[in-house]
Length: 110
Image (cartoon, rainbow, N blue to C red; front, side):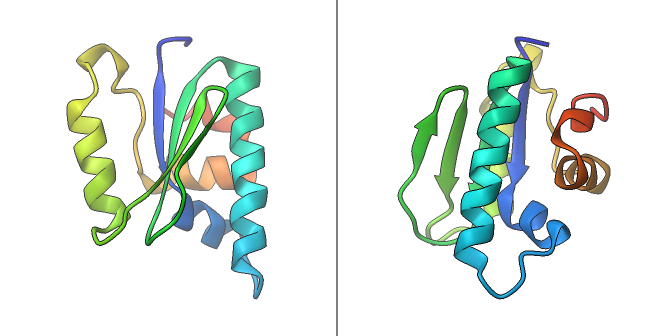
């Protein structure tokens, strides 16, 4: 799976996890969890959030903010631009829910 690429809608995952009132903290927790997942599995992950923010790379994970676009638009563009051999990720409800509840289980829901 080292060549796989997961592109996740970070806000959807945070919402499913129950972000609560401190959304900024929930996002940062998610970034840490996803970075750990990417490191442990060797899977590259792009985590896309709606709105403005400072994109960054943490090991095999890249954080992207959609700016004036929606996260869905950015995700679709990234997925289309990815080489066919790397298009393993989806923003499907099944993958998102699996990742929200157990990042290690998400690797098997592709």
